[in-house]
Amino acid sequence: MLLAADVGNTNVVFALMEGRKIKHRWRIATDPRRTGDEYAVWLMQLMSIEGIAREDVTQIIIGSVVPRAVHNLTVLGEKFFGITPVVAGGGEADWGISVDVDDPRTLGADRALNAIAAHAKYDGDLIIVDFGTATTFDAVDFTGAYKGGIIAPGINLSLDALVGNTAKLPRIAIEAPRNSSVIGTNTEDQMLIGVFWGYVAMMEGLIARMRAEIGRPAKVVATGGLAILFDEHTEMFDGVDSDLTLEGLAIIAERIAK
Image 1 (cartoon, rainbow, N blue to C red):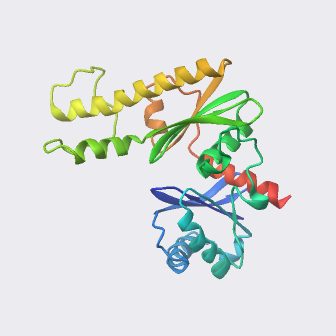
Image 2: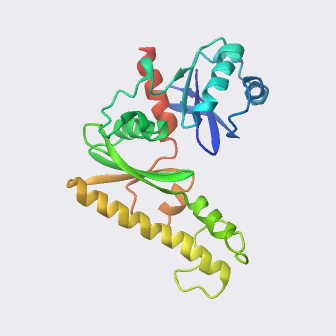
């Protein structure tokens, strides 16, 4: 069984996978100072609850946008599973796709993994929208080559900046506005309209500009925690796939195993 670790700026997601199918997943806040021992205490207990022995894990792969976390996750693998993890993007775990940007080394692991998984699942040119700490828009052509993209502040970052830099605005939850009106009659509704529909307008505008620049029909695939929420209230996505990053890790692991 494959143990995949997707290290984001906010959370680390561990998934036990058979092939590309996720059997179990667990999430913990990202902290580069967390030691391999601390990961082990937490992870081993969760595995035990599900009746999974450490011997069931035969392969470990890490995809990380937080370089400082990789060492301690490597310690976790070697000390507690007897397996040296491979790190996606390096050595035998290289991306295996063309990265057509100014400096391919700067491409985040999550974005490369999304490109790999999306190309494996969808035909033609693609635009991948990932709702994470940042919201990213990535262009992948019909050959699977990564062509570049856009980085925008994530919706929670935008809300944190709004609340943190004003004296009277309250903290609100990210959700769809209660009605279709874009003229709010109280502070909370006005904030929600600005954050939610403002974000929709930004996405629609950027996707339209990317499609025009690509010059060919392009499917839009959304991933990340808020993808489902926005998909329920817009028509901009051709597909929603919350597990692209983990599936990208599984694809690289499959390639190495062969």
